[in-house]
Image 1 (cartoon, one colour):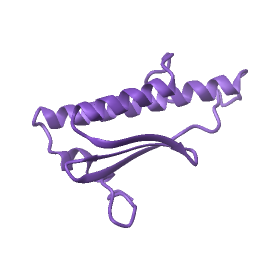
Image 2: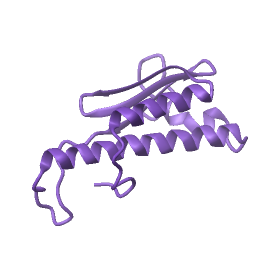
Image 3: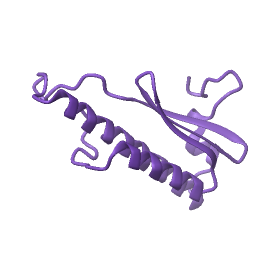
Image 4: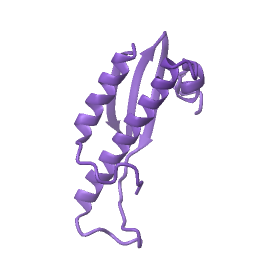
Length: 123
């Protein structure tokens, strides 16, 4: 389990909405946040480029000692909330660096840009 946002009570729905608002505020269009086949994905278009950022969603959660938690459903929900918060902070950071002129869009999202075959540059 990741440490970032380990105590968050923000729902995944609210995090997805915040990701959409953030991207639209920076000028992105066609923003979509989805969960599919064990992954969380954020898709959007920016300056004519299509982007897909994905993160594996947890399917099994264990305690730090490698045991099953007492409430596995709650642990999975918590882990999912953490992943969506991490996606949000990642996207905010990258878009902020673009806005500040620290990075170009291409430098910030090079691995996540979608190619014509449906794969990202990193894939």
